[in-house]
Length: 162
Image 1 (tube, rainbow, N blue to C red):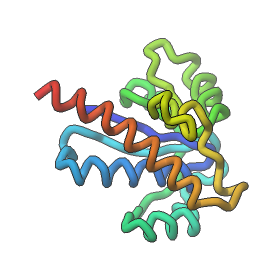
Image 2: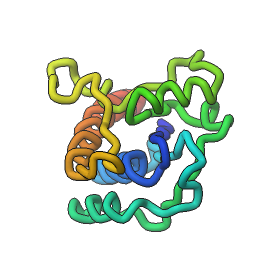
Image 3: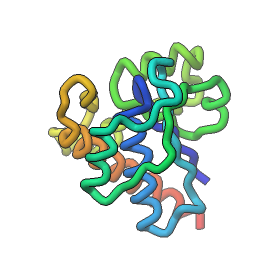
Image 4: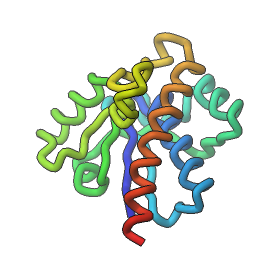
């Protein structure tokens, strides 16, 4: 089983969007039993709050729900319990590495780093925080692109395991 934790600053916009987009990809592929997918925050700012209304609405516009999701902060055990800790921007990555006191197993990455280098629009970029940009549509497109690329890599690996 592949365990993925998506991480952003507050866990009310980008990381829950990634969580539920990835869950849809996994469900559509009939691979739910091979993946565990969740999301969390690097900060304590939004702990216990639901998905931000504009993020929730953007997901709903694409037929994706996020029932019952509330923000939580990363905890020390997340490094041990998850195979991948996927941040949305460089600040998230830095904060995770500092929180976990390093990344000795190379589990921390950025979502758009999983896109192919030939995807010059996305590869190596941060997913801009729609809390500030107010561009939830752009965030959704970036996150869906990153999740799709990551899923294709992981699904091929999972299929190879039988």
